[in-house]
Length: 93
Figure: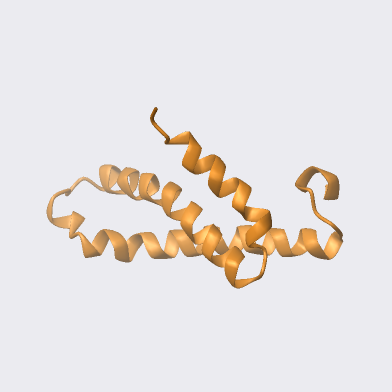
C-alpha cells in the first residue's frame, strides 16, 4: 500500500489517510452552512433535490478543503497533484 499511494513510510501513509479523512469530514460539515448561506431551502422544498445539490457541492469543496488540510499538516507537495488533476478536469480549451 505504501507504493500505491507513493508514501515514504508507514507513518507517512497514516498521515495521508488522516488528511483524506479530515478533508472528507470537513467537506460534509462545511456543505451545510454554505447551502444555508445562499438560502437554498427557500428555493427547493424537495429533500431529494436538496441532497443532490449538497452532494454536488461537496465534490469541489472537498478538493479545496483537501489542499487546506494538507497545507496545515505540511503535506501540500503530496496533495498538489490531486488538486491539479481536479483543476485540469474542468479546464476548457
